[in-house]
Length: 184
Image (cartoon, rainbow, N blue to C red):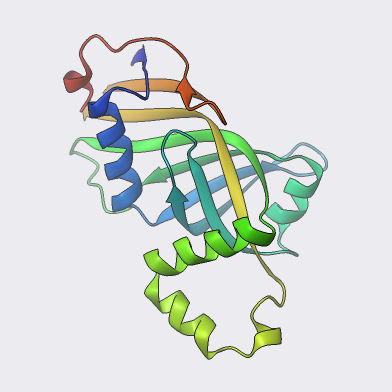
């Protein structure tokens, strides 16, 4: 496996990240329980931005991963198309960051982004009574601090591109990709 440091200003890398996010609807999320044992959960997600990448997902506030996140906000997430063939080139994202419940204006924005991506969610929400809409459910946000893109060229050969994200200043960790086309 070859690892390459990257810069989010590179258009080919941005295009690859956007394509993976757009073409995938499910994510796997890893958290740690109170005994530091791993816990994994799968959820539908939506996203906003790329420079300050934020991933939103709906969750039950009583779920194991929400309870885990209330104690330790660190989260790892994978995103990839679930219909990739084993013997074909594969692509996916590994995201690392901190996760928290959205509130107020951000929660309303996240729900609009989620409803746009999943129209059936919007229809379901519009059919609910006002008090039922929030009952037991929350929108969580993962603020991504590091992105890794995995591109498997053939069986046994893969490349990983990594970049750090500093929220607020729209700057990725400075480094360059010598041959980004060979990654994807």
